[in-house]
Amino acid sequence: MAFLVPSVEFSSISAAKFVPASPRNVGNLTVLKKKNSRGRVRVRVCSRIKDMEVGVSKMGRNLGLCVQFSAPVTSPLRPSKEDEEKQNYYVNLGYAIRTLREEFPKLFDSELSFDIYRDDIVLKDPFSSFFGIENYKSIFWALRFHGRIFFRALWVDIVSVWQPSESIIMVRWTVHGDPRVPWESRGRFDGTSEYKLDKNGKIYEHKVHNIRSE
Image (cartoon, rainbow, N blue to C red; front, side, top):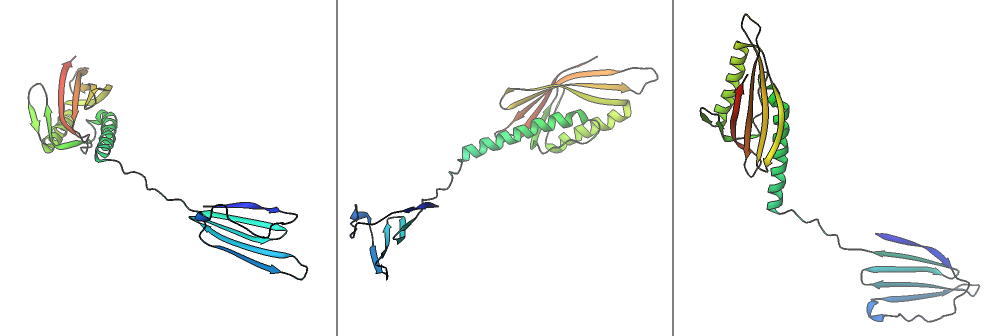
């Protein structure tokens, strides 16, 4: 970094000898004198003081001063492993909540994203349990397949999403369906999904409960 100080004009210079105020801080001091034909004296002084370089030039009517110094550059502190894990957890948590909000209503129309789940995920409902990501995918495929056979229209509404604790996501949902029957009818199913997350923010358990139909 460099600072430039504007030149200062002096009407005259009366001192003929220069003695540094703190000689211990001065490494080298050089004084050069030159007398021109008009009797004027030009003096050039160069000095080095620790990390600071000072150059004084053209000392007669005009005095120019240039100061340049350097400071150590410190690198930013690296976050600890615990801080990195916590940051990754909240990133994955936010991604999981956003994915559930956006994709759960499309459950019967398109395949979901499964990168928010662990490979050993467990699905529990009031009647049975299923283990592993492949079985988890098969359950949703079967829901879409049978939904298209038995219903003319089938869709999901997200009622609310909340977190009772930092490692749990709760989703309250309602399934609406128009069954394929000769008479006009509409079915409705209400339920709640509970998602549990590990320390990395990945879902390892999906529990479905409070299911009731109307």
